[in-house]
Length: 174
Image (cartoon, rainbow, N blue to C red):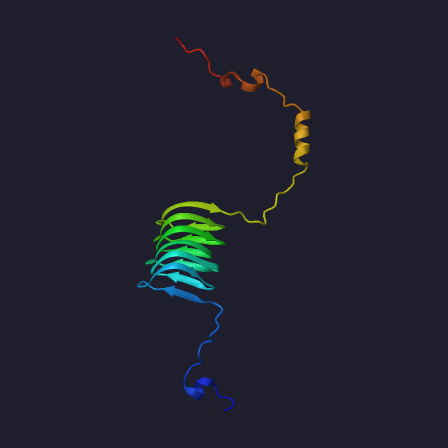
């Protein structure tokens, strides 16, 4: 009928679109996986995973009950449970207060909440858009100027000023 919605005609809401722009997969507490995981969506691990995890442009979350032993490559990683392994993140690694992490981290940014257990080697990448700025003369010109103009030396009287500023007597009192 014209003018009626699908809900009015069938009494049911329309089914969600099978294609979603944001996908999130959850590995539950009772699930254990050994092997490689690759995906094109966000992943939450509440169970046990051993192997490698590759989520190129997506977010990995190790939940409070998650236990992971893996090499991880992801855009962002949040650790709330136990994780042993190495993390390479394109952006940020967040370690929550309940986390237990042991391994290496390579990322642009990292945050660690007070109370988290962390035993790690951390390498923070610099932003590539940082450019050196030139101030006046080039480095070569500055070196040449220093070579031409010697630094004047102060004599002892100028160096120590008044008698109160004199250096201590090098001979100990008898």
